[in-house]
Image (cartoon, rainbow, N blue to C red; front, side):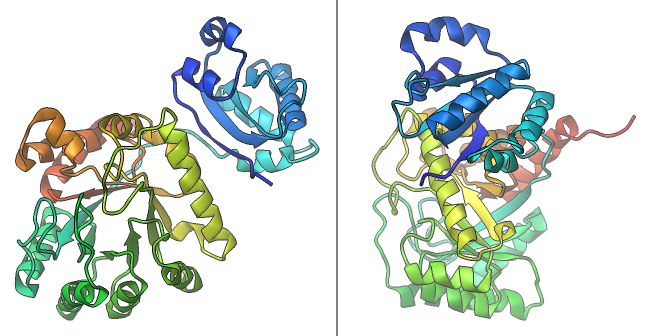
Length: 380
């Protein structure tokens, strides 16, 4: 049975109405009458959707459903509700005494208030010869350790160490080679008494296990734990913090832009989170990454950024990696130095991201500090 879940929807009401199968002859009229916050509910059965609509109307706001819902001509349907925070709280109370899975829906409605998140900065260390922006710069323990100290001095909260490039057309390397690149640096960091959290960018169980045993804290898997089933079991059984990313392909190649890219990525991440939690994972140890640039078009990347706050309803921390991505460098025809300024600017504009994964830590920290003066609410 398809599970119900709820997320914030985009403000493109016409597109959202089309996506749920709303009566096409009435969309142009309906799009102008709906207002308020928009929430999208997935995988309702027709009778559940009909009850939901009546509850919404009784509380003074509307609910849009597929035209097939009224006649129960579909197995499942999605719905849109247009409500204020106060109305949503009232709906939640009414849903708790309803039949079918509507009580379950009530428990899925979180507090969507958009409070400022004080983000962390994850500094990137690629101990590889072929990464797209810094390959070969830190491929010795001495050079990479000095760079780690610089990132910490610049304000990094987390260090992310990668031994295999995931750039387009990158060659897959042997796991033992990845281990030889990553593990010595982790040992050097811990040997020198540096206790900063360390994330290891790997899709391989063998590398991940050795990294954790050596002193790493987080596993960052760009395949969302799809590449190595042993890694899935390992992080679950040991409740190891893990970053799961959406990717169309690793290494990142091709373009796959869906008109509903945000819903597609959200559904993948939501299903993966549920899979981990149902297997015994502590939800607080899961971090989600929408996978900017990984097999996605420029249009898809910008759509994900514009609507990144919708992913907060996943109920986990959100990590964003836009640093030096081609959708920025190619769009503006700029080098990495200029791209760092653009990505730092974008990062400062996004209030709902918990962790920014970047190359230029100092610049990102500066831009985020500027933005915090606008976002933080302090008493007069």
